[in-house]
Amino acid sequence: MQGNPVFMERAIALATENVTSKRGGPFGAVIVRDGEIVATGANLVTATNDPTAHGEIVAIRNACTALKTFQLSGCHIYTSCEPCPMCLDSTTPFSMKR
Ligand SMILES: [Zn+2]
Image 1 (cartoon, helix red, strand yellow):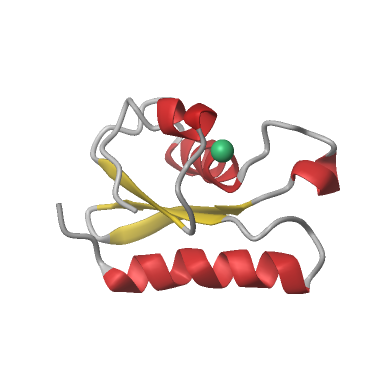
Image 2 (cartoon, protein in one colour):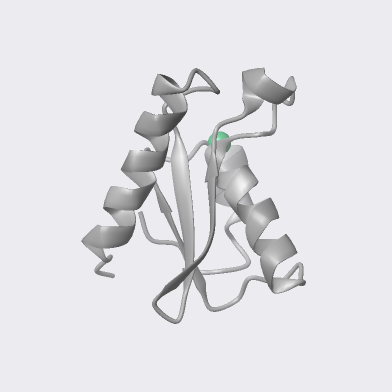
């Protein structure tokens, strides 16, 4: 499946901004539905003392809040790195691009 480079660039930019702002590690994610960004996230593990606050998980949480649902079918996620097993499993309910 071919991804949109604009969304990938946004995920990388989020990762870069996260490091330069000293909020967390170099991990960003963007969730897209119907060609529009519905949510973004960046790694907040150290900022929030939450070991599950990986960029992908933060983006998923933000997307569920924005869309007022726990189901993200039809959404695609773009990540700045290869997702860990926790994040990969969390994207199972919807298709994923990276
Ligand atoms: Zn992860």
